[in-house]
Image (cartoon, rainbow, N blue to C red; front, side, top):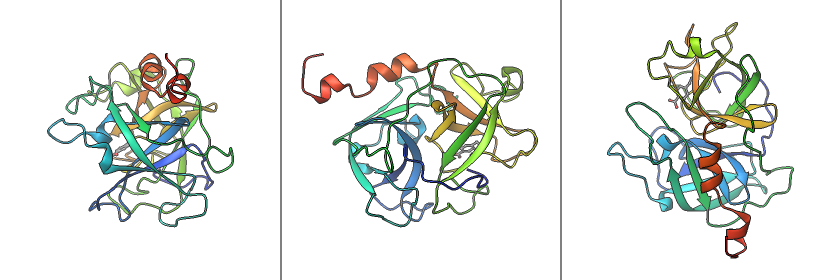
Length: 245
Ligand code: 4AZ
């Protein structure tokens, strides 16, 4: 988040980290994600692609759940290994379309409802003007340091006519901003994390022209638009139990 609005434990948000040191983020955090079932995390495709458009290996990724803090490990911190990375097959680096990914975990997240929980995906189109909140460990200033505590920023779903000022804005995307305080925005390191509206995941942090720029807005993958793809690719309870589908 660009600016701390409320500091709180956000139980369905995870820190996506590299198993190898990265330059930019001290503790290897590179993206956010959301727990949508015990063994499934929703994130952004661009988090898991190399510049040569190859998917990185699952062994290069760790998922940290259960803690609102990035740098301090607590008794509730859960470090989870990744079984499969499933970026949308039609993700385009150039056009930033279909910037959505499913992360299948090797083991189930321990869901206690207090430090770790699941969040449902949107079951309707985003409502223009709805007050939503974006959550993550992204920088509070462009190219600045990343916070230890997870932050959130309240932003409002913008009409398509506004979003289309960005030539990359196209179908499968939703844009959001606080037009009375443009500094409230998502930023680097928030990618893959959730835009929550009315208690459901409505968007996934994708891109923007900078962060907190006057007259600009954040662009998010439209979760409702991708609901069938998500439901077809998430871990299912049947599969978890080893039963035939
Ligand atoms: C990024 O670089 C990024 N303000 C994420 C979100 C936004 C801009 C940049 C939107 O990860």
